[in-house]
Structures are given as structure tokens and as C-alpha cells.
Amino acid sequence: MDNRSDIRDFLSSRRARITPEQAGVLPGGGRRRVPGLRREEVAVLAGVSTDWYTRLEKGHIAGVSEDVLLAVARALQLTEAERTHLFNLARAATRPARAPQRRSRPQIQPRVQWMLDSMTGSAAFVADGRLDILATNTLGRALHSPLFTDPGRPANFARFQFLDPQADDFYLDRQAAADVTVALLRAEAGRRPHDAPLRELVGELSTVSAEFRTRWAAHDVRIHHDGVKQFRHPVVGELELTYGTFDMPPEDGSVLRLTIYTAEPGSASEDGLRLLASWATTDAGAAQEVTPS
Image (cartoon, rainbow, N blue to C red; front, side, top):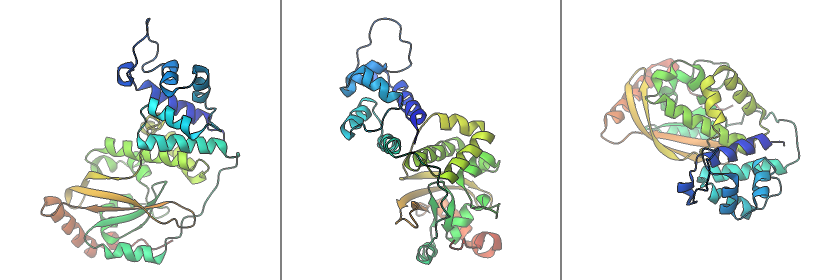
């Protein structure tokens, strides 16, 4: 696959954010024409020649050894997610070129839905790398009820955040939520560069949303872990929920992740989550389960 432009933009953007002081490099004489480190400074830090690093930053990464990639990652002070992304880009560059692949929607096994349904006090859902919600329990669907407005296709976090005006009210900090979403999609694109539906989603959002285009061009990446999110739910008001995301065994070769939202015991958010659960059981629209594909 010819992903040289992705490699070039990713490495140059990481280099631009590091100052000589942060890297422990003595600034050279003369006026600096770049916002961060120079290529020759990264080369010295990584222990390679300037010509070699220049070629690498131009996208010629196929066949580069793991040790060299790790040295470049250390020189650029890459995070864990960024290191993983760099290695994914290198693997994609090494593979033979092939046409984009269109995978069928993963088949969610009944046991997954049973597991979700057993979590009555938490909001839980399963999503794929494109951030499509593929299965959820009743409380998970109720929490994300604004996303389930189009019965023609799966609820998708990226489409909702960038194309649906409801997102401005639903997330207390929509800008932060949007940053995370794009960083997750960028990391997924590095892992699965031939995923046709993912490329179509990115193309759709890039065409319609200037906000998305700006974030996509930043080449920021993120790996799912855990954290806290704040919502302004249209039924129960503000909720502050702790979440954890876990990789699931692959279904039909697809990478799926389980996310669970819970509230701090004794908090107002716990009361809100209980109220939401009560609403979900009485509202037919919110209580309708997502059936396995």
C-alpha cells in the first residue's frame, strides 16, 4: 500500500511539536525555520544519518527494522499509541498493494448479547473500529438514545458528533469528545488501511465537516483505555460516568471492543443512571434492544 503521505505527515507533525529544549538539544546558530526539531536533530537523537531519516520521513519506511523504528519513536517522544501507530504504518507499507476490502458487518454472537443484558446497573455496548455500535444493553441504548435516530444504519459516534447538532448538547465537552473520536479513527486507519467502509466514513466526514478535516489532518492517535465522560442527557440531565473499554475476542476477523459506563456510588449521577434505567423500561423506543446482526 502506498501510505507515504500518511507516514510523512505523521512524522513531520510529531517532529514539529518538540522544541530543542524538550529534546535536550542545544539550539544551533541562525534563525530556525521549523516550529520544532530539525530533521538532522532527530537523526542525531535516533542515531541514524540525516539522509536516512529524511528518506524515512518522506514515507520510505518499508523494510525498516524494529530497532530503528523504536529509536525514532524515542527521539520523537512518541506516546504508546503513537508508537503503535508508527509500527502499523510500517507494516502497511511492507504489505503488497491491494484493493480496499469491504467486510460484512460482524456477526455478534448471542452470548455477547446475553452478557450485555446481564449488566443491569451499567450502560454497556460493543463497537467496532469504525465506532459503529453493534450491540448494547437496555441502559446503554437509553444513554445513547440521541444516536439511534436513523434505523437504516448502525449508530456511529463519529457521524453523530460531526453531523448531528444534538451532539453540542449531549456532550458537556463536545470538543474533547470529538478529539478522542478522530484520534481513535486515525489509529484504526493505521491498523486497517484497506478497510473500505472506514475509508468511506472518513471521506464522508471530511467532505461535510471542516471540524473533522482539521482534526484528521493533525494525525493524532489514541488507544481505548478508560476515563470519565460527562453527558447532558435529554431525559435525566447531566451525568458524569466512569468508563472502561476492553478488547473482545474477534468475531469474523473483526476487532470489537466492549465499553462499560458506571456512576460513582452515592453520587447524583448514580441517581440519574437509575432514573434513566426506569425511563428505559417504560419507553418503548429506548428499551428496544439491539438484536445480534
